[in-house]
Length: 158
Image (cartoon, rainbow, N blue to C red; front, side, top):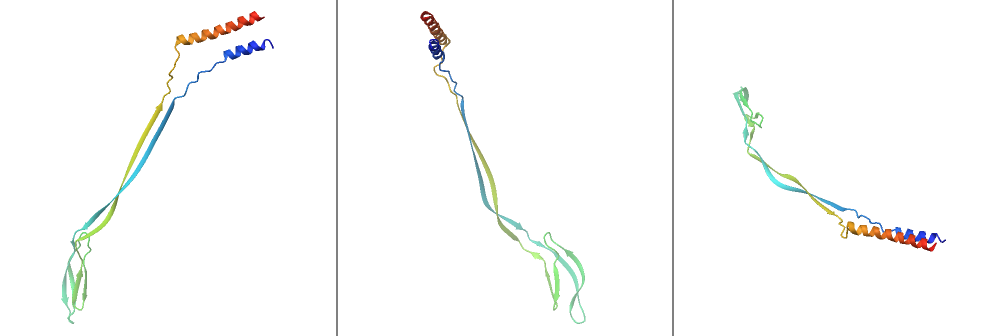
C-alpha cells in the first residue's frame, strides 16, 4: 500500500491535458438554377401565285358536239399540276390556277438558361495562444523538477 500511493501521485502528475488540433473546416455550396424560357411568335408562310397551261385544238362533230382533237401544249407550274379539262354540254372547263396564299401559325422558341452559383467558404482554425519555445522549455523543466522532488521526498520517507 505504501508503494502504491507515490505511484498514483506520479501517474497523476505525468498525465496532463493533451493538445488537440482542431480540424480545418470547409463548407462548399453550389446552387444550380435552370430557367427555360419559351417565346411564342407568329410567323407566316407565303405561297406565291402559280399557274399551269394547256392548249388544245377543238373540233365540232356532225351532232354539233365539241371534242378535243389534239393537245398542243401542256405546262405545269412549280406547285401546280396541269389543268384538268372537262367538256360538258358544249361547255369546256379547265381548272388549274392558284392565288396568293398565306399560312399563319405560331412557333415556340425555347431558350434554356443554366445559372450555376458556387459558394465556397473555408474556415481555417488559427491558434491564438501559441506557446513559444521558451515557455515550452519552462513547462518541461517544471515537470522534471516536480518528478525529482517527488523522488526526493519518497527517498526521505524511506
